[in-house]
Image (cartoon, rainbow, N blue to C red):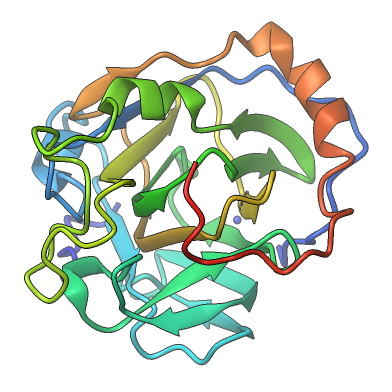
Length: 263
C-alpha cells in the first residue's frame, strides 16, 4: 500500500459505545475519487490552504495485529496521533487491502471499532478519507467531537452515485492485479469526508445492518478546506437528531456476518 508524504507542518481514547448526548449539526461534504484510486489526492486537498498548514497522514494497517488496540502517528511524527480500539485486521484478499497487499480492517456488527484523534495543529482535524472496498448497504461510519455525534454516513447515496454494478462500471470489482475484478458485484472507491464548519476527534466504523463486513484501508487524516473528486449528496444536518436515536440501537445484533454477502 502507498503511504502519503507529509506536507509542511501542518483527537482521547474513543469509546465503542454510542453517545446518548445530543447530535451537533456539523455540515459534512463527501466525495469519491476516480475508479481505481486507493489513496487521497493530497495535491488537491492542499490546493486551497494558502499559507496555512497542510499535513495529511495515513495508517495502512500492514503491521497491525488483528483485534488489537494500538497508537499510530499516521506517518506525521507527532503532529497527528490516533488510538485505534479493537480493530479486526485481516490479510488482503478479494474484499479489500489497498494495492492488493498487506492488511486491512474489516468491521462487523459484532466487532465495530473506533479511532480517537489528537493533533498539535491549531486548526484541529476536519478531514478523514479511506479506500472502501466491497461496499454494501450496512457500511456505517460516524464522526464525533467530545463524545457527541456530529455526523453519520450511510452508503445509500454513495452506492447510487457510483452506479449499479455491471461490466461497464469501472468501480465494480477489486481493481488490484492480485485479484483482477474479483467480487465484481460490489463497489470499490476512495471516499473523502470534510467537516465544513467544525472539527472532530473520533471516527467509528460498524456494519449495520449486516450484509457482510465493512472493509476499508489507507485511513487518511488532516485539515483541508476543499475536497477532490465527485461530490456525493448527503443528509441535511437537521436529520442528525433522528440518526442519533437510530444509532442508539446499533450493536445489539451479535450475529456472525458472512463475508461474501452482497447488497
